Image 1 (spheres, one colour):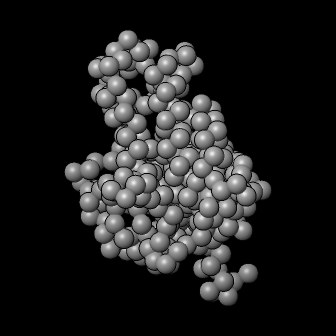
Image 2 (cartoon, helix red, strand yellow; image 1 turned 30 degrees about the vertical axis):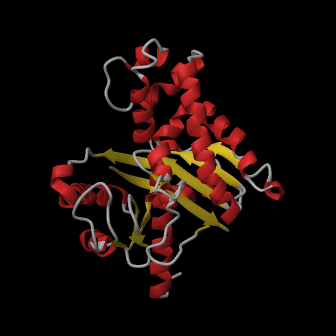
Length: 301
């Protein structure tokens, strides 16, 4: 978890906290409450913005649920933050927030519409149209990770999330123990996918095969996004996107053949330029919006 202060174009202070899953949502709130007074005294912010990892009622700041940390369901995070900070607060889904950041200050600056997909422990998506986050009916988000790819229930997340690629690598060890990829992984038993880029650049056949397959699976998911929303650009973010150009190129190569002919070659595929700052920058943009809305309600300038 990150807590930052600053402007969208300049983060002036950053605090990172390890998440204790046993402490649940209350533990996270205690961490936030412990640092807010100091940050407020130092930087004098005018509002708070949050990118939350799960479905959110963005109008009220009420959390629908978290798929990772217990205790968040139906919690009114926006009201709680205003209570502990004394500032207006705006809450949105983290992928939505990252999409806004990339559209305004990142890889998609100047493009419209913009679709962002985060490829991490799960898969999330965000759509920005005319500089604004697109929201469906509550608690609607662009949940590409739960897009069904087959009728028997295979979803994008089960093929393209970081843990799914880690599993694919582990399953290959028995048949391909000689692979350079496993020499790089050594005895590690999680996060194996982070070695794909190095193994790919060393011309390891298994690494190149997995990058190609993963890129094709991502492209298949994004072909549905393209047919529905026709984004000008799709930005790849999250931990798996740190595989870099090999993965981006694999997605870009695969997607045209999955589109109806009239839509080819399809959207530009880009890597996130904000990387781990996508959500914090987007949250700062939310805070700016929350301040503007609060000022307008009070009849201020």
